[in-house]
Image (cartoon, rainbow, N blue to C red):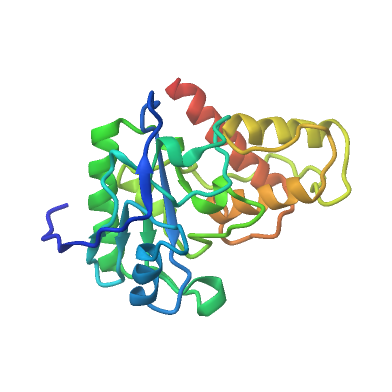
Length: 252
């Protein structure tokens, strides 16, 4: 992709050193700002009272703001988990996408914004060698409290441009198993939980489909099955998860 980038400096005090012996930067986290305007979001991330920030922010017109140097730790992930990592801020790069979010009029992410994201994210992945399954949304790493960037975000387009993982094809099961929902229990629930944990989500593998499992299935669907975000692990949702795990195992 050849494009003219508009990058503006927007330094924030909301940052600190990565750990003294930092692990390799190996996660890219995508967010939406969830505020009424770009101005409000940018001011919030520069206000020391709120203690939030990201390394980058991309406006809807494609303007890119650099807030935190990548060698520093931005404060974007909060309480989070991905692939047995509880302190996601330590080893991640965070990108905020200007969008009012579910609270203020959630809408699709416009082409100039997506074009700028693809350019920026491709550069980040190339520099750090971040693997496909470690390109995640805020809802993936904090599924009980976050839902961004949400079901209108075009994860498939990113994957077509080499950013992130996506099912190889629309997955429909050969037969429709019993859908797993709140209150279900047994070996099928346990296997689902183990698969979600293997893929990266943090949850208890206890064989009971409670509110935690329900929230994590919803987060998985927001990312990988956006037409159905209901937290019910039907056959198609489970087939998509199996397909993604097969891709991950092939890569390993």
